[in-house]
Length: 299
Image 1 (cartoon, rainbow, N blue to C red):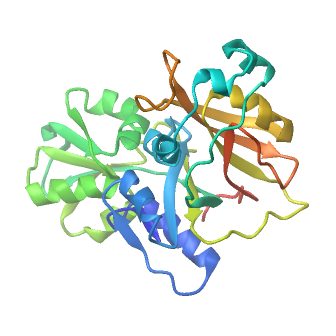
Image 2: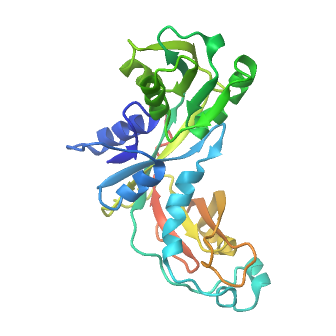
Image 3: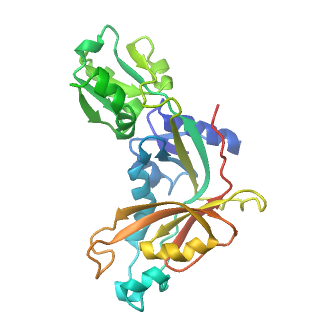
């Protein structure tokens, strides 16, 4: 099971949770970036990706990864997508288009409570900190605390929270600090000084993680709540999938150059809907997966 590493990340905690749910012998494979974790999903049985946070919203790296197969498909022109013209998208007039290549499916989710720690080297003082490293999501979640207590410290994005701590320890610079999880701190307890705990903006801070699988997932329980994720070649396709249930979220991203012709600002989109049916294929949209959401917080 691939996840955003190294050991001590929130991704590792989510991966352990999924592994317990699945049962059996599942080994964890840490990856350097979210993009690497998604790429590993093509060879690993499973991959875990963070998708959204209470404070910072959607994780753009994950959305880009999930939409990336669309860029590998030959796309029709805007005239083909909308036979009656671009304005017909408003009426849901979306032509059929080639399916994306086979890819891992989203088969489950979980929600993890997030509490960040600000740490530095053993013997370091808070007033000496000149820069803080962490994943960009964590830096954003802790911006209010940093504005108040370390307004002059440079905020340096890092591929992961635990990786940020590892880099600060390796550098041996007492003017550096990292924002990371308690699990990461506990792994290096003898080498770090915890300046503050719970430095995120709010107490009830959560990150949602998705589980991807190459194996055929079990069908959602018929009488349980169901959600589905779709990759949309164009936002006009939302009218087609909205017939299946209520739209929960839509996240648009710029389409790669040349992916769609005849559009000044082409966009791909990842949509989540709360569905009323188990079979939800439609033209113009690719079903990324459907499942019964966990809807509980991890202990």
